[in-house]
Length: 175
Image 1 (cartoon, rainbow, N blue to C red):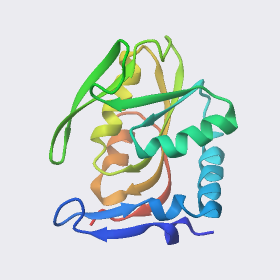
Image 2: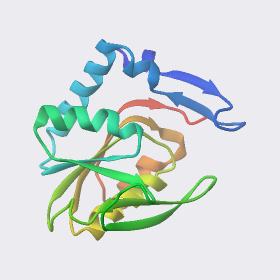
Image 3: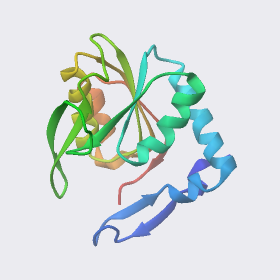
Image 4: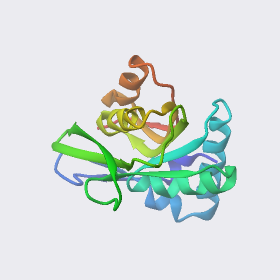
């Protein structure tokens, strides 16, 4: 099954000049979604990890299913002010502004190895902030797994240059 066939491309969303890669067409197909989860699990076998984290919000769709199947704790990395207890926070730059990502302070223990799953990597700003959040929590990033890599935007390459292991299921150009 070619998962690329299940990704819808929407021009000029969320703003002019962006070609949005839409995963809703992939997750609404039960066979494509199951194959996606199976491929993520297969790629995860290369790494030793204690917990699975996902980046809000589309990463939750994939990581929660993987977490359930692998029987690993699931950690939510959320936007600012979405978590009710004490948090660690990291601010970062986006292509169109700044943002903050947070995790509960009690979610990650010292030396926990954390696999981070997300739907897509573009420039890598959110992914790098997520790695910093794991490290601020005294954990270690085992690897990143993305469903889609927008290869020409350089995010995956930047993560690798910073010493992080990355995997992805599908490559698309970012434009």
